[in-house]
Length: 299
Image (cartoon, rainbow, N blue to C red; front, side, top):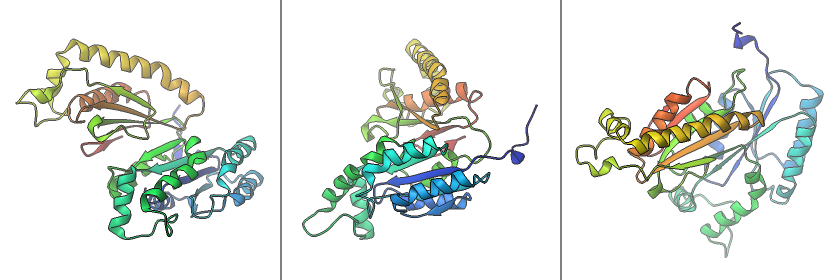
C-alpha cells in the first residue's frame, strides 16, 4: 500500500555542522535554514544538553534543528563532544554530525583571496599553522562525523546542491548513498567511506579517438565493456556493495560515500560509477552520482 509521505510525521531531527574555517560551514547552515531547520550559529557546547532536554520533554513532530560548532569559542569544550553525543543518544535523540573540510592549501588560498583573518591566527602563528591547529582541535567531532564533505573542488553552487540533496527531508529513512568518480592525480576524496581503484583497467586515454571523450560517452563505454577485466571488476564491486550496504544501513548509518578512482577521473572511473549507479538505482531511493572531475549530479 502506498503511503502519502506528506502525511507522515517525522521525529525531531538535530544536525551538528562543523568543519575547518573556510570549508563552507556557513553555506551549509544557510542551506539547512532554507530547508526549514531552526539554525543556531556557533552554539556553545555546554548548551547542547539543554537543547536535547527540550527535544526529549517536548518531542514535537517535524522539529528540525541545526547548530554549528567550531573552534572559535568551543575549543575548551570540544573534548566533551563524544560524551555529549552519547548522552543524547541514550535519551533517544539521534544527532547527525556533518563535517566540512578542504585541503589545507585550498583553505589558505581562500583566506588569502578574501583577506579574512583566521579565527586561530595571531601574532607569531602563521595561517598554515592555524589551519593545522584547527584540524587538531576539531578531531573529536571528525571522529564522530556521519557525513564528511570535501569542498576542495566544489563551487558554492555545487556545495549548496550537495548539502540539499544529501539532507533529505522526506519520510524515507533509507541511507543516503553517494557514488563519486575521481582522479587519483587530484587526490582521494576525504569524505570517501569506500575507495575502489580501477586504474588496472585498460585506459581509453591511450586511444586517440577516445582521449577527448569521457566515461559518459558511448564509444568509451563500448571500449571498456569489451574488456573482460572491466566486466569482472564491475561484478565484484557490485557484489560487495550489494552485500554490505544493507549491513551499514541496519547499523543506523545515515550517509555513505563510495569513491571510484582512475588516473584522471575522466574515463574508467566515470564509466564504472555510471554502471554502478544504474545497477543500484532501484535498490536505494536516495542514491546520488557525482563526477568530481566533471560536472553534474544524478539523483
